[in-house]
Length: 89
Image 1: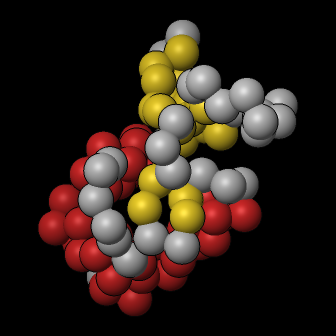
Image 2 (image 1 turned 60 degrees about the horizontal axis):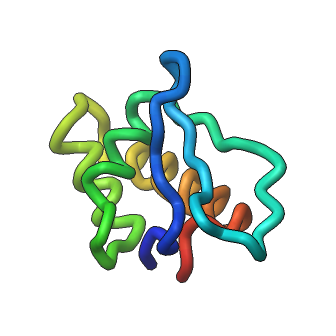
């Protein structure tokens, strides 16, 4: 999968949010708020092809987290962002 073109991570008043830029055809009525971990993954994955295993490996390399938990968290984030139309499979 990959991050769809036109979506960017911004810092808005201290909050990390994903927003669509120049996406006239998308009804983006909500901003997606990210915690520091999700923002880390976004920055590492931007412009790359990736899967949940790669996401989990990044989490394991950065944080003290087991592979199973990292995989579950990565899958959850990926599912939410695919559903929101931010990630394309």
